[in-house]
Image (cartoon, rainbow, N blue to C red):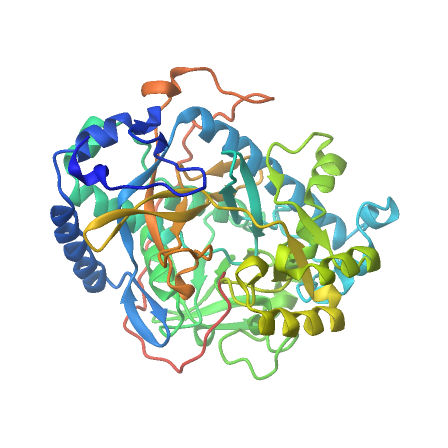
Length: 521
């Protein structure tokens, strides 16, 4: 093999590209053949060029108060059609179960009566919103967009790490990563059959249009952003522009007669659907935080009256609670009458006294996660923690067992990453993005592959120094994917394409506002 791969040394984890020394996995054969003529210096040169392009385009993130270009590794991750079919069906199954659970919690609550989930688990969750009780979305959809984080364990098996159905972010990086890779390595795409990712805005727009109150024939849709100082503001502007809808802040909206309107140069205009990128507690100061200056007073009353749809729905946070995560396989069996296609990471509920005692005695064997944490903040990896950290953790967990779960440490799969001028293994995960229009759940082919760039770390979040890879899903007629889909059930039909007319709009991308941030995952 060429020098670019000669020095690559996999570690004790499932390697995505190589089954063994000099043994590429079949899905990577064509990619490796295309990369072999290159050397690390050429890849580094292209990576530096790409970083400059990302900075110029505003594809950045806030790292310790400094705006940096989002790190994109030059070596893509490849998933063949057989594996992708399984992931599509598994993620779809999970989204539908969570959708049914949320509808049940905020209406009938039969799940408690049947003993599937204890009511205390939900009512003590920070994500539970009493204000959402009895609030039924116009088309019944609460999870319009989901980001289900997946990992591959030591045996190469995909499993779910956590669910994100509040305000999942990161799809803009998927779109921009593909744009950059296509421009940087045009010959690679000419020789590969890689599924495109540019259909996402059309699918999202169609789902938002379907969510509008029934009388709306040509619904007015807006993207509600906290403002330019939000860490994901680039994503807000990109999606608004690609969908052809207005990007608004809370000050652009007002409520009257339980209806939502936006200010325009031609007077007020009623809004039918709000794709909000603001956390529940900042969304409506009449019902949540009174001091919020980034929401719109009265928006919850308008939604309760059925005059506006909010995507994603208010109150979805209970499904992101990591304690509830441990019940999702049971929810799939309960609501869908099917076995989970994608399992959870082995997890333990610390509100059980016996399990809590056992875990506290052996903290150095587990990963401890705060149930309301996000972005990798607060996670303690027992085998890597020092004695002082474990001692402090012992007291914290003992004082608030409901606030934590324990998991078996999993050596996330690795992939070659360009570090300086050489390729080295780094741990990765995958966040597929699912869009639910009320009739079907569609997955963006690929999703966001996140990379733990510091050596030895398992935390992939950009806020903790992580990066990303372009994720390639190969067509079914490419290489090993020509086989029939594996696993139980029938493959999801992704051939039909939803078309929605474009809507005129403008983007208020040049505004300046105060340093207020909503919550993004």
